[in-house]
Length: 107
Ligand SMILES: [Zn+2]
Image 1 (tube, protein in one colour):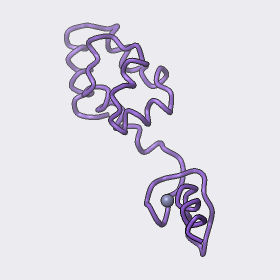
Image 2 (cartoon, protein in one colour):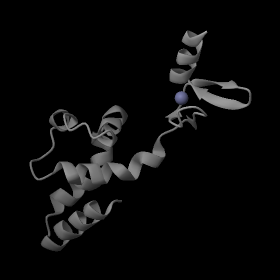
Image 3 (cartoon, protein in one colour):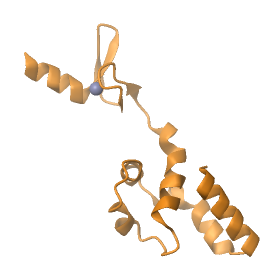
């Protein structure tokens, strides 16, 4: 977990605010993968969709989400270096769908 998230959990534990600790620990089940992605992209509008309690700040949510970045499946695109699940193998290199479409349009 991120530093802020860790400290927040610790603080709530110390204060005995068990329900908040439980909420934060169970956050993964409440956030859909697409929403997690938007948190990574710093899209703060996602906050309104998550119906989070007021005490959950954006910084806390962002810090929490940073821990799940590694989870994203897919392979590194040889052209744009983004991870993608959809794409093709081209000359033994993986090219994501986005880049493949751009290449096709160049022809
Ligand atoms: Zn690409």
